[in-house]
Amino acid sequence: MTKEVETIHEYHLNKNEPDKAQFVLYRLGDYLKKNRANTTRPHMHSYYQIIWFQSGEGSHVVDFNTYAVQSDSIFFVAKNQVHYFDSNTDYGGYLLHFNESFLIHNDSEVAFFLKSNFFNNPYQSPVCYIDQTIHQTLDTYLAQLQAELADPSPLGKEELLRGYLKAFLIQLQRFKNYQEQPTFVTDEKRLQLLRYINLVDEHYKKGLSIGEYARLMHLSSRTLSEITGHFLHKTPSQLIQERIILEAQRLLLHSELNINQIGFRLGFDDPSYFVKYFKKHAGVSPSEFRRAIS
Image (cartoon, rainbow, N blue to C red; front, side):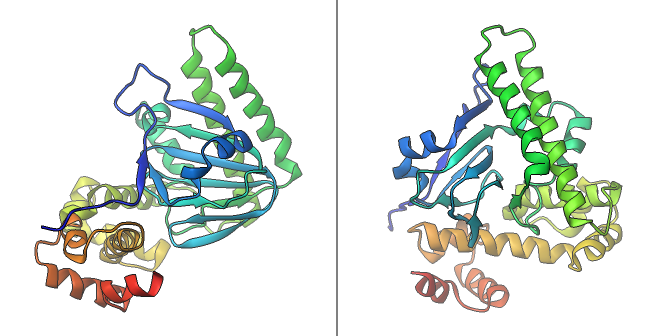
């Protein structure tokens, strides 16, 4: 029997411990110096991460893409994304870590989180390059977060921290919208798209049909297809396929699992079918992909 050896580590922020901190803030340079052995290796989190590089230049890898780091780059790393830092520890800036439960407490907050879709949309870049028109505003919210974290009083602490974090995200979303002049507004159909993307991320290993996804969203299969086609020019099935292939590529690159183990982890009972599926959608077999990136 082949021994399963994982080379990618998953980090948690007080997972399943609601009485402990669900939000933390670090100075980037100090954090990287202290954790260099871990941060420069591919890893993932069960929480969300905002990385604000206020100074310094280099690169940052998220999944299979390398992005330029420059002064005032802000990266948004979603839970379960594989990423790693370069070896530069002289960056200035901040790291914000928070669990989903910290930001989401009711349906309206779910909607807010989906609208602030920095983390939830795999079809856009995870980095936002800001300028001085918003730097001071964001810095003010960070100062408020730091002050509240340092305040010994527990009264309303979580509510204030959540409010400052929301304000930080809202200002960033406004800036991003203004810079990009989006061709569509954040409406109900776009929220439905993001909900579908989130559902796929949660259930892609289970082999759910498009009809089952549509029922979870209280939509018809046709409406769901119209939504994904309108915004992404893709079918609902294509989004599921892309998520499966992305996870397979992550495991092929960052783990020592064999092909059969990877297929089984992704819900394929038949190893040969997994190989055919991967080759059909990735253009090469799993073994060819692994050799190419080794």
